[in-house]
Length: 365
Length: 263
Ligand SMILES: Nc1ncnc2c1ncn2[C@@H]1O[C@H](COP(=O)(O)OP(=O)(O)OP(=O)(O)O)[C@@H](O)[C@H]1O
Ligand SMILES: [Mg+2]
Image (cartoon, rainbow over all chains, first blue to last red; front, side, top):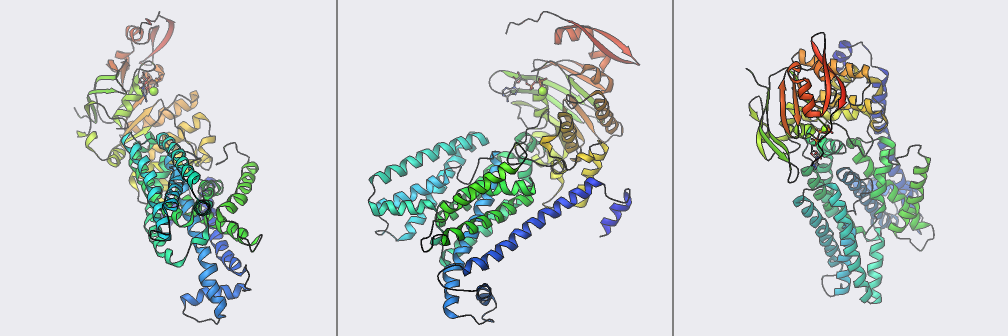
């Protein structure tokens, strides 16, 4: 407060129109994020009520609060079971996946300086898919059960990005090299997966396909601690670099002149976000669209400051993902449309609408 | 004599052919020095070497007698600010946020009110405060140039490197920007090194000029010493008349001299 007073009195006494506009802009960004967060919480309650067993919104929130404040509400036991073990985990899984993809898409677009970059630019999804194919054809049930799948997906996803990061670091880490290498690796691993598919049995084929579509049904409470740990470590690390990311969008030379070592930051961001994406991908499959689009939506609404853009991309990603998933689960119930498919079916038209509606030529402005 | 910025035997090449050939100079504090020379003579390259955006193959750059190549990048940024010749931006940002980037060497994760006030002050000084909320990409070339200058100024480094800061400005804004820079130099806030094509502007505002050709310094010293018909002819292949207007030389290009296009 004291500094506020001093600052105002030292000048003409009041803020100029542009300064006011800037303050309002910052307020708008915070307001936007809070609104979406609130919507996610509301949506959670609504989504829980959807499904074969009738549950009211009140029951939904009571059941969830019971877990925190140890049974201060009375909720039907069966309902509580269903909420806590079936419907809520799926939402949490969706929120985490959407948040992870959104955040990673955002930081990767910044360091690669390319609006087409997404968490899968580095071949992460095709790597993971190949890992699954390998596990499926080598026999899942023989060794280690379903964890072989996840482990394989994770290892191969990281292998891909690791290879590209290493290549780019040795060759000087320009963003163009990384994108080109990523696309090349994508083709390679897609070809390898298809080769495996070609020789796979029907059962193995079904496994590969269902995983490739991306499905939140795979998310259970046992997996929660692992993902949460990775999130708690990685997301703050990415947020810490928000300033440097702002600066890097102005080009490597400018970044260096302002004291940011562009190559180091790029490598750091790629390592951390690959880790994050690989973790999410191996639990949920590929829901790639969110990572490409959530950052663009966020940028259209709140502008390019990564201190706000990173969390906003995540929150928006989570919101779009759980909305799409809710529709996919219920639109032709009891058949459930896999999350990845539904996200694209709903997200793409919405995104096209945003592009067409915007007056600017560069769609991400 | 005090020396603020010193270059010793700088050699640089992008690939095999040398672009800078043993460049030497020293600049006393609080002076405005211009680098002039034909296209491709290595002015931008030299400026980038000084700011360690490029690493010279040999030679050293000293600022206050400290070796720039041995400093942390953030420390370099606290000592040297750089206004690029052009800036490419992929994603949108408004002008305030673009300029605020220049505060990076001085701040933690949060920008304080003081940082923001600094930004507004510089925007006001450059007369572009009302552009604050505009998208940087949608500014005119000259407005962008002023915003880039603003970003370098909020960096509060005492050496300012400018790569053709007036190339997109109309004559009113050219004088405006040059007066601002000259003023900061006169008030002993900064030492400025500026690459520029407009010899008359350079002559009028600089304390010293450095004339380059093919990566070598051909002449250096006061404008009246550097701007001679002979120098201009040998460096630019242009015949020029040199006149004087209130003590500063200015040149009138007369005609091209057949350029030796051998290699
Ligand atoms: N990134 C690069 N890779 C290879 N060669 C380069 C690169 N940048 C510049 N050059 C070469 O270095 C030489 C000097 O370029 P520089 O940009 O320093 O010239 P300049 O004096 O600033 O010219 P101008 O007046 O046109 O700005 C030119 O011959 C140019 O072709
Ligand atoms: Mg140049």
